Image 1 (cartoon, one colour):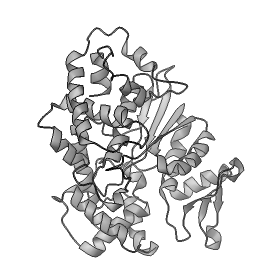
Image 2 (cartoon, one colour):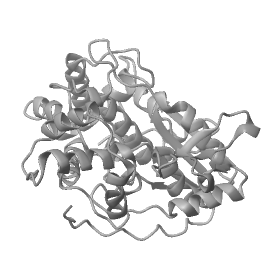
Image 3 (tube, helix red, strand yellow):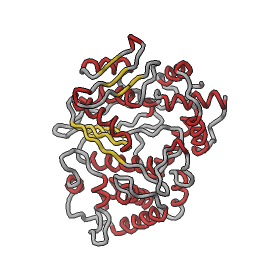
Image 4 (cartoon, one colour):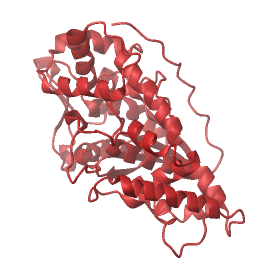
Length: 385
């Protein structure tokens, strides 16, 4: 294992101005082991619009730390598999779909032992990232730039605020932990008094799962915010119900925003199975960048993945509709008004209900329709470009 340098973490944001509410935006992360699929793009674009819109009305911290989730078996196992089966491969120029094919091979292989993963777990706690992971993250920074996405620190070392033991102790103090390690057993999140089932956090041989990593990050952060917004894959809803219950006990209002995956040809497939073909972020960007200008691509991608696909999973990805959305975006940009009838913050506030965050679906859908008024230019440039 060779350590690669990462950018240093930034300081925590300053306290909010008096009277301005604080929002923690905490979307699920994408493991840096494969291309960004349409399902990934949907979540990223949804989060980006929510962040850009809500920060006009509140003080928003966008927490998206790959460092926090590197300790999961999914990531450590892949890196151990690469070192064991491919040795000192140079990943510098390897395409992300090539790394993704290796990830598919890994998911089909037997699991490595906890003993084999332990050196990797210790290394990532000190900022180490496997060269394959670094290569994918560097490619993703290029995609983020091409999509106009805010980069929350893909290449920064952003460790969680608590060690695993400290997080488990914090849970125990809340009466939410069933720890059987002293008898050789696993550790469970225990919310049975709230009618929720036991949820394993750490296996008997010491492997922490994604939920345990999320708790290491969010337990120390949540009390500093008025609202915590969790965006995640709808298939993980049981885990996020549990996470929401824990964070609510710390004081903030917790909002869960679940998004359905995007079917490909009518089928929902996990990225672990491959099948991203010509529909991953890099391929989609190559297909549109020569025909459309960047502003139209930024807006059109958001119109398609947010407004047209919606929060559910009913509609399959369609390249023709994506191109149609980008053309529509060009028309909206050309017709944008510089004399908006109301200030931007007032317009955005109309797309909130009883929560602090701005609803991306309501906001993006409001741009579509033949009889809609021409959009305000500050809305398009501030939130959608």
